[in-house]
Image (cartoon, rainbow, N blue to C red; front, side, top):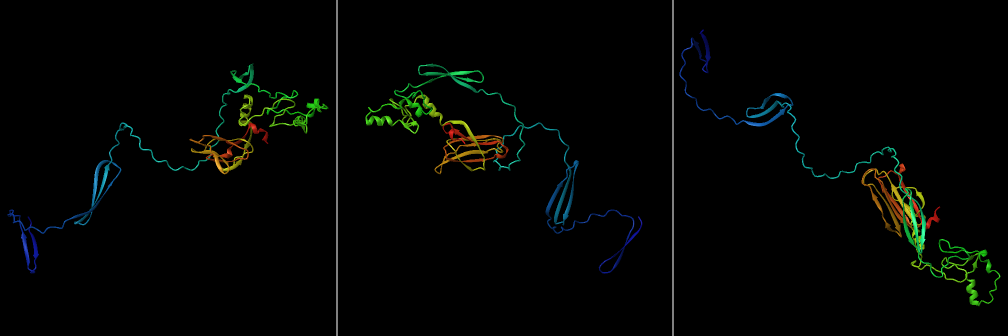
Amino acid sequence: MAEINYEIIVDDAIQYTIELNEQGPQGRQGEQGPKGDSGENAQILGATATVDNNSGTPSVDVTTGGTSVARTFEFAFHNLKGDQGERGIQGEQGIQGIQGQTGPQGPQGIQGIQGPQGPTGETGNGVSGVTKISTVGLVDNYRMAFTDGTYFDYPVTNGADGEGSVNSVNNILPDNNGNVTLTIPDISNLANKDLSNLSSTGNSKFQEPLVSGTNVKTINNNSILGNGNLTIADIDLSNLTNTGKTYITKMGLPSTTYIPLTIGASGSAYVAPADGYVAAVFTQATRDRSFLDLVTFQGGRTLLYPRSVSSVVGDYLGCWCPVRKGQSYNLDYDGFNISNNTCFLTFIYAQGSESEAQ
């Protein structure tokens, strides 16, 4: 080994020279030194971690920060994503969850274009006519024929003629109300007759039903000339024949005479022109829960309140109610487009008020 000289200067400024020659044998181990002072406890102030979305050989990069006694660590994991596995078998269907609350109604959508007209339906089976086919005593047998060639027969039992009732006067039959109207020529055979043998009372009673103007006087729309009894309907109509009762019953039913009404805004008021019925038919509801109702009033009070409510979009609704002449009623609706000719409001005259139609 080459010679190496070191110079060591200590505090007393004395200079020593150490000469190293060939390495000598290893000296004995020195004694263990005293225990050093305890170091400060280290603290970890925080750690963060990130994971990338790559696949491959997993690895992690650790970055330390802070000081020896207050460390921070940053872990960056790489390639933790494995290869895509095989598709698993489908699991069993889970149980149905609890139904959520109904959300708020959305805004009304734009009116769609009208669809094509559907095919013509099959011809319905209507009534072609009613004829009387026979009479047995008080029973008249009628036959109602249908357009498909079928028919059915039914009997109508008439009441017996009352005693003293007027069948005709001078061969003039009563009208539908039971009245016989006579003019002067119809009673010309009484002209210039000698009535001098009548008492004043008899003469008065004879003259009472005679001409007032050109017609014979009547009592409750019944009239008679000469001897006989006047049959007048009582207040409960109990002495009417079946034909008379049937006629009166029909007076309140809808007739074939009607007038279309203009549909105003919801809540519009109307007044019935006569006794009859008001009917409303609205189609193509624009939303579910659309509604249509008619409200009738009498003396400031609500009498009838028929209402119809849709269940789906495109539904159609209808309602009707009877009304008296001069009675007021309102039309209320929501969820319909009245400008596309799919909504109708009609007043239908009762059979007894057809004469009042304009």
